[in-house]
Length: 478
Image (cartoon, rainbow, N blue to C red; front, top):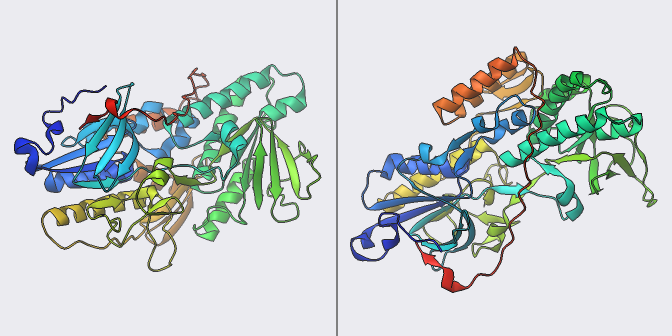
């Protein structure tokens, strides 16, 4: 059981603390941290306001650079910044949110390290719990695939790639060797394209250390259910990215959907009804034995899933009104029926009034929503008029590997080396900590002179936590 020693934070509703208003931010991603920073600048000095943030990890992860952690370009800790150093006037609690009751205005949290369960009261709340990988009801894929959502995911995938190279070095059968070195990325959005590009960079740099592994033995395949890559991006830039990546040996399979993956074989449904050769024939394929026309099998032990996201399960179980798993919000990002409760980021369903469609989840959108939610919370507290959320994209960028990128910024389209420099400059400026900026910059400089590290770090896979019913007697009130 956790005791409360938060300097009065547990005194909600008692004595002098009765007049204090508590704002609880649930989630420490881009949306949650930006909301906290904005609230600190506007309300941080107000003694009547208590700012609290709850997050499962005690750091902000800079997710756009996860693929570079996989390739060994950047050290793991250099893309994480402790939340306590960013939001210095916000009380931080490391825990896993288990439930939100907007009627009782309480949030149930499991504390880290077996600390027990807490029930936290709030006056205002911001739900920014983000998303998780969406496997579209395929448990076998979920059990065997690698994802790219967390720092642990990136570290595990890097270890997997090195492990496959080590096993291939000692494999005498050339066919089995190619199966070991056949890496399949599912999804041709930003995450999939950038992961495939960095993965190929790592394989090309690392194979020289393995005498039995030739450059032609390693293969990266991208499977995409749509007819194009990078949907929503400028078509000419997307075509440039596809051509450049194919020149480096990456194969594209468009209109191809994964049906199953058992850890050894990937069953793929060809949605076009014919062969989309994207990058040449796949000699390791064979007809699926189930006789289902259009299905084929790709022999691979490594499948990286970047094909979609869905709100975390807690959101789906919450008492907030949802649609397709996302919390419904109004023009002010406030949850209808629950004044003072806002939802932002990947877990919020915000429909673009111009297109009538939900706005795609991006870090840029999450930060903008976090800032608007903070302004509207301040408006509620100070009896001012709230402002509607309006989002205008500042541009799109994607690294495609080997000092090449595509970028659409301020109405200008760029590709190649200069787009790569712009990508680096923009994302370096977005890192919250000056110390981390310097560390990432040094990592990039070192990469110019030295080859990639191929050390395999043995990390234990963290098992998914299960939800169990706990007796009310173990609850603490925070």
